[in-house]
Image (cartoon, rainbow, N blue to C red; front, side):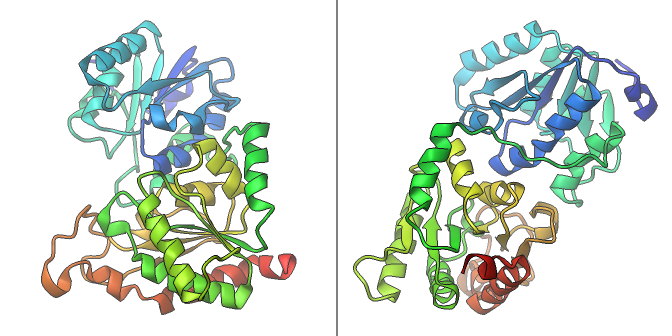
Length: 365
């Protein structure tokens, strides 16, 4: 077994080929993106590859610091898995960095045959035993973005700017501009969906919140989400229509399920504010510098929220807050009590603070 390395050993490395393993999820990939420039700055002659879920490749492809993305087929079956491991072995990586820390990424790490295999203290499912360098002070209770950035600090580049760059084409930007140019400012991008049941603040509350926002700030509402989140997006669109007594609202546009990740990036780059459950689009908007309001029920704003004082994070205060249950374990009156406790009044107060400190309403009004 290789001996465990320390920071001084790491500082002497000059790898030719680096493999970054961070397959998912969208928000985690977004928070990892700033490390690409750091790795390229520290190892300017190295080729950097990224193992990423195929559906998330758009987030990393085209980055100037990246040599290639290697797609991971999460549901591709045995043949796809064997093919991936063969590719990893054939690349002859010198340095592999596993920021996912699961059994499958540990197997990927071993398959590379890299001499130096780096990971975090949060590595689990046995993946820690595939590493020979564990970055210290990377415990689970710290913010995820800070935990990933410990790699930059370990490389002596912790003071580097955190740049979230996602390559978009002129066609992507033109498509986004076509959608946005018809909307009055300020534009509030709203993402009412989330994969976990316990993360989805009720659509009716989103509708009440955005009705108040329109009454106070005018502007428009741009509803976003994946194809799977289209039902919630349609419910929000319908609820807004009913609340505002019109068969059609020109200031509400629903684009859920209609954009690629690069198009979503271009859309979010052009809005004024983003409002979202704890989800990938929340991290994408925040990473792009959009003032963002994040809603936290079963997760922790400290552990899972984005960095930056320009954002607002609002959390439930129920006893089981930040429990990270994908489905609510309670029944009866306690079932999804976090949704009731996190009322519109408190979220509205956070939205007002977000708007006030941004100064954007005065600029675009």
